[in-house]
Image (cartoon, rainbow, N blue to C red; front, side, top):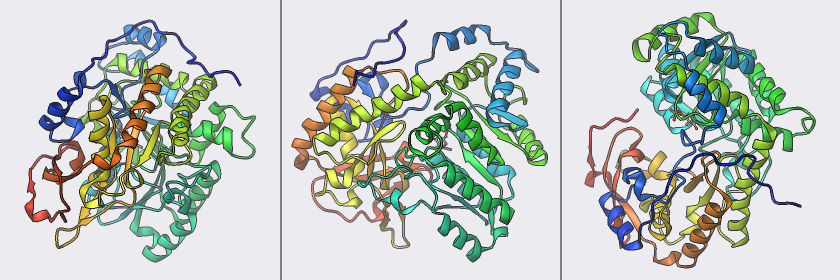
Length: 475
Ligand SMILES: *Cc1c(COP(=O)(O)O)cnc(C)c1O
């Protein structure tokens, strides 16, 4: 088979900066072992996130110039609204400055206090917004999804039986919403099958529970359906995406993912009463309903991006280039989540660093080691991000300790990715030298963004009493 090449050529470049190991050692210490606190200029290959980091196309840049900055009723809004309506089939389209703003507005307007919001796996900002609104987020991921090292085609699926038992146990009036994350970001970028979406939607309908989709990576998910689900091989990604949305009452979207935009998002829905409530809050928090916290040029870039992202030569390159990194690591016996996901490769930090107990955050330790070794920035998705404390202040760990290597869209070439693989393989050979970490300062919500840590040379049980809690809330 021939090499799958980038389906684009490069018109504009930006430099990246090299540092030495000695410099990175100091930088890491200054950043309190939290790469969110490292200046981007000190990062060589930035795999922190695929969010807002895409390279825009020449057509999107042309859209930026065409952006209509009228306060009300701009033509860029019309273009944006028309595009989102066509994709989702939903009549009420509310632009927001990013995904979490959609979530904040949705869960503030939904009657969800003291109720449950059920998901395959909630993303961290979604969970935080649900909890901030006084509701409880519940993840009902299918059994395959919890087996990091065992491949299956749709590991992002919701456990349909668990959903039915949960509704029976709690009653449908206690469940404010079911929201399906496609692809399942926190669960490894694993896709959800059309069949699962259809089944969950039907259960919600029967029980009168609103069903929403967190659609950040709808195009990557749709392409996996085309590749892996029976009956979809000859259906276009465009049609698959539109079918997904027919099963939902609404969706939230971060345009920083599958719309190739650097900022933006939206809420879309069928319910006019909920839409009106959301618009009222939008005006207070984000802006007038025809721009919602975005410039006209952003709306234009999103509209163009949403049309580009379902291009199948792009999606094939996208999925295959992630699989390329995944295969290199797997062939070197490095523990990676299987199969490779839609936007990232996930290292299993528990298996990579078996000598570091979960109380010492093996995922974060690996994130720091990757930076030190090769200037690569990644993110922990484990007990630093999702851990809680019990009444005695002991850590209740997350089920998985992962390190996500998120690949920005259309940004890095194959040689960048070869370098990333070389660094990880080199690190794997000396993994026994990597030390665990302990938290010295943390915020009460979304602590991973701002937490300060320090290395732990010896075993420590990490009792919360030793930790200073700052008042920083990063929602
Ligand atoms: C990024 C993301 C969000 C939040 O979007 P932002 O634009 O970062 O606020 C919500 N859900 C999922 C699945 C995401 O990946």
